Image (tube, rainbow, N blue to C red; front, side, top):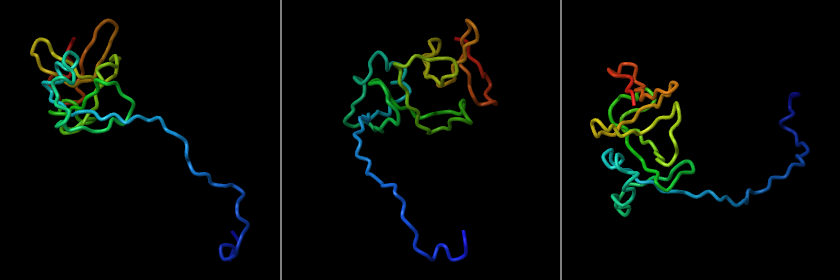
Length: 140
C-alpha cells in the first residue's frame, strides 16, 4: 500500500451483508450421565433405571439416538486419548466397527469396560490405548 493510503477515504465494497435468518432444524438432545453399572444393562433397561428429573444432563454435540448416555472415564487404560473424568457420549444403537472406541460388557467378570474395537479377519479384540497397560488386548 502507498504511504498515507489508510488515511484517505476509499470506495466501499458492493458486497452487502445479509443477516443469517435461515431456520435450523437442529434438535438439541439432553443426555444423562449414568454409572458404569447402569451402562452394563443400558440396552435392556434404558431410561427406566434413571430418574431424569434429578440426573445430570448435557446437550449432545452431534445428532444422537434416544438411548444415548454419558459416562465419565475411570481408570487409565485409554490414556493418552482419554483421561479419568473425561465425559464420553455413547450411542448404543450405532453398530460398532473396527477402530471404534466402545463400551463392552465383559461376560466373564460382569464388568463394563471402555476400549478400542480391533477386527483382524474373523478375530475381534478390545485394545487398551495406554502403551503401559499390562493386558493391552482382550480377545472377544
